[in-house]
Length: 207
Image 1 (cartoon, rainbow, N blue to C red):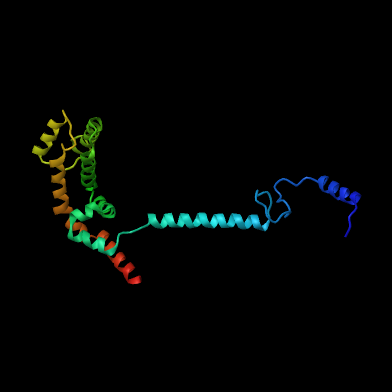
Image 2: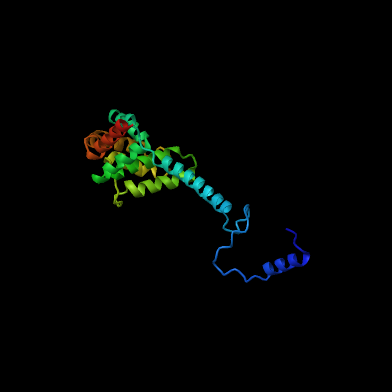
């Protein structure tokens, strides 16, 4: 249909002079390819929905990775080797949970702190960490004092004058032996370990 120039100008004027859009109200669906996100057209809503789905998928993948659990084979290997359990992050965490129930968690924390100290090569950092370990676990004034014999304790006191990253090596071995011979057998017979083992077996049967 032919539209005169006058009629066209009237339509344009009516559009320009239309009352302003109320604040908070969605704009009318005036386009079909709204790339700027200025309207509520179906294309724009679909674009936003796709973006949200992609974001959720990425977050689900991250959460799945973070919620990984030790396999049945790994849990069984802990019963055969105390050393293997300590090398496993999950093993240390479950063993720490058991030690906490026996009020001996500080033994493991002391052992881990000594492991970290061994890796240090910077003298100033070694000095700082060595003194922190002493104040936290060796000093008789510390509420977290670990059980060390007098000979080992005296050797540590002498080493404080010139701290080294190996100054707690003998004390660490003493605590390691204590955990291995005393705490570890009880851990393997505890509900903490047995429940985890049963859970892993159940998961294997389901899969």
